[in-house]
Length: 193
Image (cartoon, rainbow, N blue to C red; front, side, top):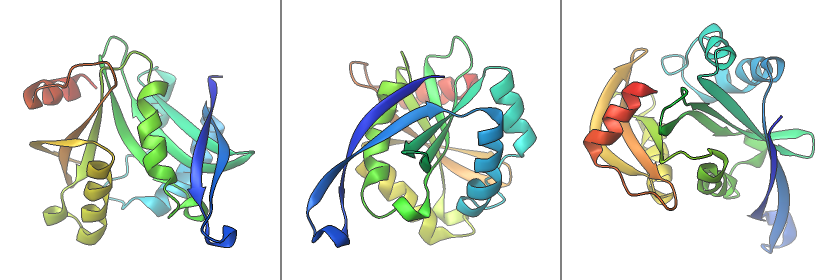
């Protein structure tokens, strides 16, 4: 298993507003853990029109074209990030990302997204599909997601795509030390993922 630790700065109400640091560990999930995350977390966190079937996700993991990071506070899942990156692809695609409810509203998601490029070895960029508010069932949630990604440094290619009955904007999170992609190159790379 791949395992790494990271320090996250959190501000909680029960600390009187003081900022505390907490150590979280990143590791790739196995099939059993991913199935539990899908059933217990993803079905709550994503609308059915955005959610791939579990069998498709497990098949992608089994054939090596995808992997899932679990971020843990001790033994407790705090967040998960499903990544698609076929062998030979220069980019990683963030397929699903969520912080579990008990860990939300403390800035953890932004810090994890900032750390993601370091975990995606040799990726030149992280590609993100974010639901278009004007086509979303929950437009307010789609606007919040786009705002979150923008605050974290992701930029909009101004390209869209239609998948699984949902429309998405294609965003790019540049990786440190790599040149920023042209929007067309990001879209082309997405077809490889």
